[in-house]
Length: 438
Image: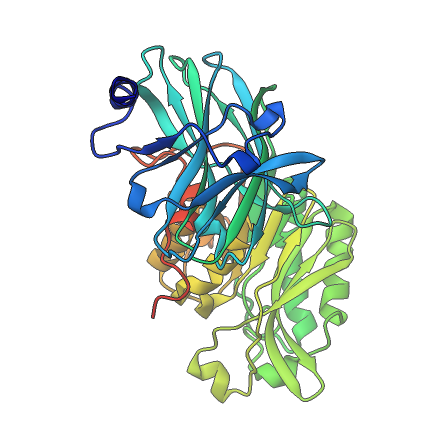
């Protein structure tokens, strides 16, 4: 037995650095050891014995009739362990990773439950980046969630090591099943043409007159085949000399109807900032109009500056996201960019693009929100930079007084790999501070 343990240790040290010496359990409790073949070659690992979660092959919580790989905190908030499996792969090919999990009493699943893929060369040395596949969907009525992402394997990779991880939750339990890598085709690009308008109306008498002044730029964006175009904050008040309350209207209402006709003509989405009245309440609202001119949804500005509070505006209380035909989008308005929570909440809910009608603000904050959430940020403004910020915070398309329509095509399926970090996007939710930090 001593020789066997030494041999295992030597093999492991040839793969991982000395500071990561795991405990490896090749056998589990006899009560749970007889699972189907799909789980038969998985082993349990952890960095240190002291932090190992409880683990077992579960025959009661089944996925499609098959036993599952389970782990539990067992009263320890510092647990960290994984079920792992290593398999042969072909280098330079596309593979789809898929795994399912069901969780009970896990406070923050995005931090505590994850999958990791390590690419190994023919000498079992790490190559390429560590990958953390994404998940955000429940796939059955019983609460099973899907982890899924497509990867191109490194050119010198011969093996993939899959780790199904549970960590940092004392009273939760997770059940994993059907984790696999399956060869697939290169994913098709998911292209979208993002546009924003840089224009400030002046000397208007009514809210509708303002919208009419914006319409030539909307038509220009439509002729340039924009999929979605963003207008500034307060499109119905800027340059009118009126108050927020005076230009407020129902939503849906006259402004959404007017914008809907343009959207339908060009088969494009429109985002615009207007002031919404609901009974005695007035909100600073951003609306989303669909390609067929229909009202899709709205966001009521949550972060209000003192000027709007003193002007009688009431804050909203949620950050909705919307599914479009090209991807999931969110909206925030002006002062929201000052704080990390609005953009972070939208990204956590799956927003791939955030549209930001804004009066004026700090461009560095806009760049930061794009970078820290790995989303495209589209701003339309009167006195900041109008355009599209990419995942590095770079302004890749800009609207100016001379050329008011900023438009650029991006691929939402393109994986962004950062030096040393790999795919930062999927690491964010796994590594950000927990919600209970004061």
